[in-house]
Length: 122
Image 1 (cartoon, rainbow, N blue to C red):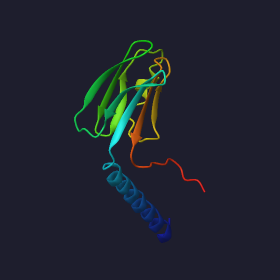
Image 2: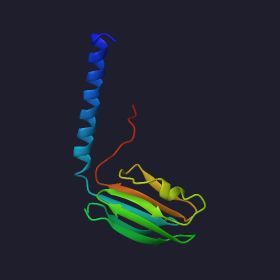
Image 3: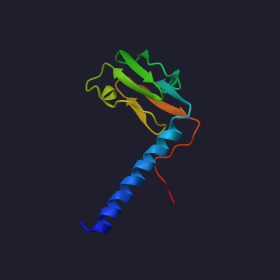
């Protein structure tokens, strides 16, 4: 590697770190609400701006689904389904992320006041 290659790598590294910091700063100020649907019917709204960790029990098609929430994040921690895919998805925190639990007919999505995009289209 010559000097220009090293400079390019350092420049890309600095830009990546600065972009991550900027997104973290703007993401933390946005109030979010988690919406939980059972068979396309809204059954629960959860305010995610609360710092405290909470746990909710939702009645699913196959049994109880345990949902955990903390500051701006939500996940399914335990559920009854053949492959347990819902609980393996982990924490979601953006409005374009969704937890879909088809065996239990439950959908969890995040509603945000700020417009979030996962792609830019020209």
